[in-house]
Length: 174
Image (tube, rainbow, N blue to C red; front, side):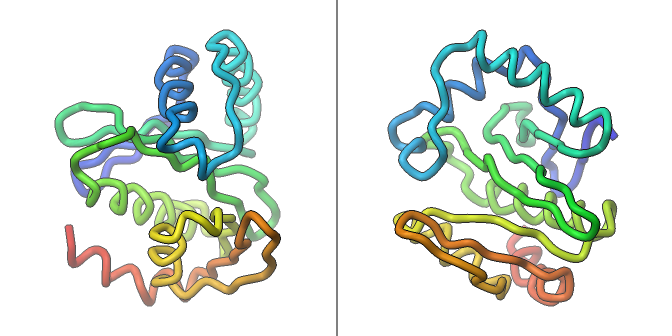
């Protein structure tokens, strides 16, 4: 699998040449407050991608660049910490001031569908910064289970049955 295409969106696997884009969106002040810190050194990002490609090859991890109907790269999303029946989603960051927010929702639905229907896993794990209220509210629409929280984050598990039961609400928007 090199690419996923659905709803006029493409998710392609990250390449070393994406390092500039990844660093630019992950270090933007409007986005970085809700995600783990990223070094602004492009060469370090390239090295990280080289290491990641080994995990990708063994199907342990997948890191995607999200491309819209106009061919513009607008976000990243990652699957990692794969276990027997679950995987974690994260590194979901869109370009600052991206003017088509419905595409961000499409990406999330596409990737969750991929996990549950293609990888045939039963659970997704993810964390959301408590301050990122709009994202917390969005994820709650799928009825995940809150499994933990700390001062900074909520930690959720989304079961396949809950995603499949609630996905239609979002597909109606597309």
